[in-house]
Image (tube, rainbow, N blue to C red; front, side, top):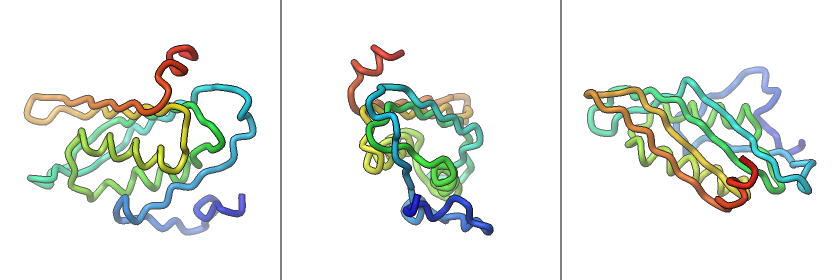
Length: 139
């Protein structure tokens, strides 16, 4: 718990970009169990890198932890940091998955973006990293 700097802050400092955001973890006390964690962010926003128009999405994160769990406030602030970031839908989903995997070292991780339609087309990118067979076994 000593490494948690964001949880319990009386005044929350919102990061202005993903590079500035800090993903923090807590220990997984159930490392002998393989189990699935599902996280759902209904209010994700980023910007179109060409027009700077806002893009709205639901971000779904599913992972099978190993030694670490993502701390939810840190994740919330990290996802919020995309609010002023110009990035394509496909890129943001891959970037989120890679950033999470870098800190969690999860057995499996899946990140999906369910983006609101723009120009009549909805884009739903999904990336999976790690042991897909383990995920299939647990699902």
